[in-house]
Image 1 (cartoon, rainbow, N blue to C red):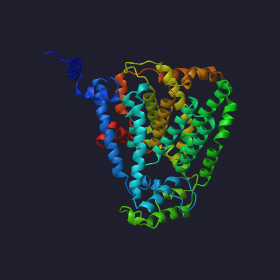
Image 2 (tube, rainbow, N blue to C red):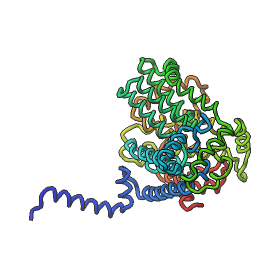
Image 3 (tube, one colour):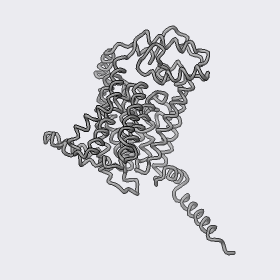
Image 4 (cartoon, rainbow, N blue to C red):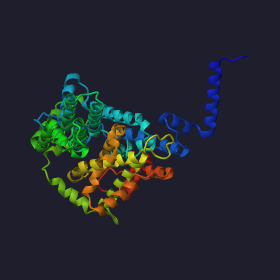
Length: 467
């Protein structure tokens, strides 16, 4: 019997698939097909462990942060304008009015919104794999796993990151001439104001890089050389002046005890629509709502205490610095890793661009390390914001780091030489086994008090077995 050509092709595919399955194993084949790259058996095993840790992290965050009792997560979302204008009040006001209109439990709304923003971020990172960012990095502590191990899934962190992503995509559309200047800047102002009114951290994480990119685009539009784009910088400040004004206002109107009690009372009045909560029936607010009454400057004493603390013989700030640098090394190595076979771009140039972005972001985020002691949370903001910026802009002329080389002229020769050596080390290739072990061993502790047990509990394996 003569088989038709289509039947022969199908049989041939089945035979090839069975050969592949024998040769590589079902796990390696599945992981490679899912991520769209060829993964080794060792990578596939690590990916399986990371996937299990990832799912456990989502379930654990939801189970531990699902009611008004969880005052630093759900409670932060429920800050509203019942007592007057105050920082972080925009989402809570929307949830408050939606609860009154629909009778939906506001705690469930918080969970749904948090998971939605997290899902958007996860989908974006997974769909940008054509840039050959190693899948291990996406699911590692410098990627999606970091906010889970630090217990920050049900917070506004992903709102900040997704709004930053929206502005980056608008700027990218402006760069490609699909958006004109004025509509792009109006939308960026609108989105950024929403971000700042939701969580003032947006002003540190997003505004500096948005101003710099806008400056570059304005300078390019006016045919300015990139190193005399100070006119573009001034214009970018002027264009984003509404956002900067709101940021200054939010920093000034930080809140007081009367506003905090008014917000708490507004939710007490809706207690019948919410789950059982000891803190809801108490007479005073707690957590993030209570922190609105915090006197500015009191946090500096806590930061100073952490700065001079030790975990046994380990100086805690040094431990955090090593953790941060290990995470940065992993993040940079993940771009165009040598284990990825079909590289069609300059790995070193991509990593240099990622290093430049990471340097800008850590300078922008640095005040958060003084204003608060959620160091693991700040590191997650650093890594994820860097990932988003690089993934959006890596296929543009912005990646050409050589055009910024004149900045070296401003440095003394000795410092410039050291900088180049450090850059070469951070941007160098990493052996696949080293990458795997760094993924497995890198943990970002949840609390500021770094210790060996905190580190072990935050590693993917330690978090999976709940040390």
